[in-house]
Length: 508
Image (cartoon, one colour):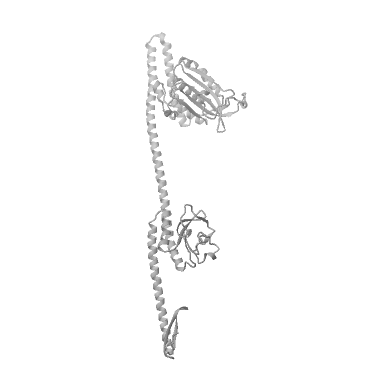
């Protein structure tokens, strides 16, 4: 190549079968070299080949050490992010800004779909709506299905490629794993052909291992945090439940204490009167004996009623109260009660009415128990209705929630019940303010017994009341059958059929 060159030697620089280059020696004189010179040059080329290979290995080791140091540093950064989304955002930031990849995104598997959870770089700006792709589509889908990385030098030649950015020409995707199961994909893209090589594949595969560990830690942290939240919620609920239980226990203790006091008073008063009038029978005037006997009978009846209430609750709690059911006509039962108590109500100057519904369906129940319920309601109405007032009983058949019911209502024009006391009326031992105001005897068991009896019959008891306007207690019992089937005349065209709502006072 030079006009002064007349002779030359050349020897290849080989590493095995790989040609690394050529070493050349030139001389201005012709025939300046001998075979020995060529042998020497070949030996030099061999040494040069070894030196160049060592330099390459050194650079490779140095680069790997730098990569390992960088990966370790990035792993430490990842492990500082315990929450999932901040971790994913940190991953795409580090891969883009520190490693220099132009487009980065992390896809995670959710219900057989790949969802882009974090992205950074041109063409992949974050959006409010997650980008989803079926696992059977795209290069990232292939990575999931095969559990192997994918290096695509030219995406235009890959049939699986799905364009999310029109500028992408090459793509590299590596799997993120939990043990051997693929949980997602770390994906990078480039706007250049052959934008990635084997070194990029190796580096991102190592990085994917770090990211996978960090993701598993974040998932564990999320589960622990959720468990902690659930535990706190459970503890709060249990604490609230225990507090309510403690309040109920304290209230029960208070009511039981009050009950013992009331029972003691209720027992002491009639017993004291009985002792007094027994003494009067022994020492008093004979012409007053009939009056004394009436008082004794009344006080004895009072004691019997009290003891019956206590025994009824004892049998209900122990489950020893037998239920002898039969088909019953509530009109007949109510009518008998009204007839039996007319005189007693008249003595108190209280009007007593009964308005039966014609062709009332039968109910199935224990006559003795239900009579106790109706008798309690009538007695309460009498006690809390002043002279000149009215107590009314009425029967109706109603339909509610596609079920047929037979109801018996007891209305009074008495003192009424404050709203805050109504929800406690059917609680054992509870006595309202009206009972103490009027000095009526009782233990707070009557209405609770009524509720327990009706519960056993598949029925219920409800109340409507306003202070100074009176009260309506309604007994609900399931209809047993149509009256025509039980030998009663029945006309299905009953007028003024009550609605599904609670009967109003005007219905009486």
